[in-house]
Length: 245
Length: 386
Ligand SMILES: Nc1ncnc2c1ncn2[C@@H]1O[C@H](COP(=O)(O)OP(=O)(O)OP(=O)(O)O)[C@@H](O)[C@H]1O
Ligand SMILES: [Mg+2]
Image (cartoon, rainbow over all chains, first blue to last red; front, side, top):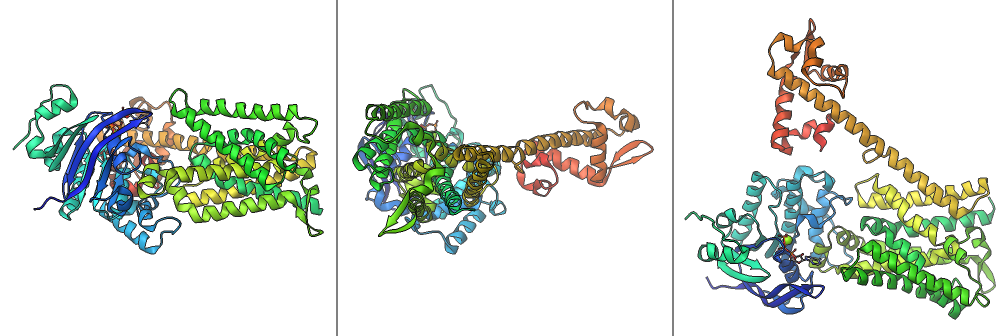
C-alpha cells in the first residue's frame, strides 16, 4: 500500500495568551488509520485537534489536509468536540443537533431541507438513537449525548474524523458500539483520529498511536511504538502496561 | 384610543420585538450582562453624535453610538483575555468608565447640549409621538416609529438569513468554527445588532427598558420551551404583551410607561418562574414530592418481594418495617393499589404479578441505568425520567 498522508502538521506551535501549550509539533497521519492520541490531562490533545481544524490560530507552523490548507478541505473533515464543551441545556432536540453536521456542506445562509433531515435520521439510526430523535438534549444520558455527537460527525460524511474523547463517561456497551462504528469507518477507508485516555484498550482498538505531552513524543503503528518507554516519556512516571500479543 | 396612544403602543411593541430577537441569543450565550454594559456605555457615543448632528434621531448618531457599544465588547474581551479578571469584573470595569465619560461630556457642555442623563437612561415614551417625521410636507408618523421599524426590519432579515449560523455557533462554537462559520463574525454581528437596537430604542424607551426588554422575555421563554424557534416566538410574544399591557398599567395608574412595562416584564417572569410546567418552581416541587413517593413505593414493593412471612406483610406493621417518615404509608398503599401492584387480603399485603414484574424491572434499571428498557415506564413514573 502506497502511503497517502491524510493530515500533515509542520512545526506547529500553539499558545494561549502567549504561553505555548504545544511546541513544534511535526506529525504525519497516513490515510486509513484508526489513531489514538494519548497524553496526560493538559497535554494539549484538544488543542492539537482545534489547531488542525482552524478553531485556534497557531503562532507558528502549518497544517495540511491531503496537501491543501484546512480552509480548502473543510468538507473532508468531521469533528466531535469534547462533550463538556457545549451547553446541553440549549433548547434543541437530538435530531436538530445531528442536522448541524450538514451545515458545513450547505454553507452560509442556505437552510437544511428534506435531504439533510433524511441523512440525519440515517445517522441517528446508525448509532442506535433513532428512538430519541425528538428528545431535548439535556434529557439524554451522557452516553446518549456522546452518540448524538458521533451521529453528527457521521452525517458530515467526511474522509477524516477527529474525535475528542468519544468514550468519556460511556458504559461498556456504548463503548463497544462506538468503537465498532469507528472500525467500520476505517474499513470504509476513512481516517479516524481519537483522543483516548484508557491506555489498556489502545492495542485492542487502534492501529496507530501518537504520544503527546506539549511536544510530540512518538507517532507510529501501535505494534511498534506502544511500549513502556514511550508511556514513561509521555506520562512522566514509570509506566507499565502489559500488552497481550 | 387616540392615535397618540396607538402610536405609543406600536413603538413599544416594535422595540420589544427588536430587543427580544438579539436578547434570546444573549440569554442563551449567557451574556445578559453585556446588554447592560452596552446600554450604559453608548452614552459618550450619543453625546459625540449629538455634537456632530444636533439630532437625537440621526442615523449617524445611531451608528456612532452603536460603535461605542462594540468598543465596550472589544474592551471587555481584551481585559478578560489578560486572564487577570473574570468576564463580569471586566464588564464592571469598562462600562462605568465609558458611562462616566459621557456624563462628564454632558456636564461640561450643559449649556449647548439639550440632553440629560435621565433622558438617556429612562427615555420618555409618552413624548415619542410628538417628534414627527415630515417628508415633503406630509406627516408620515413619529420619528421613533420609523427608526425602530427600520432596525427591526434589518434584525428580522438578519435572523432569517443567519438563523442556522446563530444557532450552531451559540450551541457549539468549536463545530461552527470547524465548519467554516466564523464564530467571531457571528459574535460581533450579534453585538452590533444589540448595540444598534439599544441606541435606536433609547430615545423612545430609555436604556434601562431596553435591557429589560432584551433579557426578561428571553429568560421567561427559556423556562417554557426546549425549541429555539418557539423560544424566539415566545420571547417576542412576552415582549409585546408586556409593552402593551405595561402601557395600560401606566395609563390607569398615571405612572411612567417604561417603569410599568419593566414591572410587567418582571411579573410575567415571576409567574412563569413559579408555574412553568416542567422547569417552574412548583412543578419541580411537585415532581420531587412524587419522586419521594415513588421511591417509597419501590422500597415497599421490594420489601414485599423479599419477605414471604405474614408478619412482615401486615398492613398495620408496615410502618415499623419500612422507615416511612417522609411519606404517609397510606398514600403509598393507595398508589400501589391504584396501579394494581398489590392485593390486600385480610390485612395482608401481597404483590400481584404486575407488581412483581414492575419491581424487578425497576430494580434492574436502577442498578444498570440502562435507559432503553424503561422507556414505557417514563410516562407513568417521575422516578425514571431522570
Ligand atoms: N482557552 C484556554 N485558555 C488558556 N489556557 C488554556 C485554554 N484551553 C486550554 N488551556 C491550557 O492549555 C493546555 C492544554 O489544554 P488541552 O485542553 O489541549 O489539554 P488536553 O490534553 O485536551 O487535556 P484533557 O485530557 O484534560 O482534555 C492546558 O494546560 C490548559 O490549561
Ligand atoms: Mg481535552
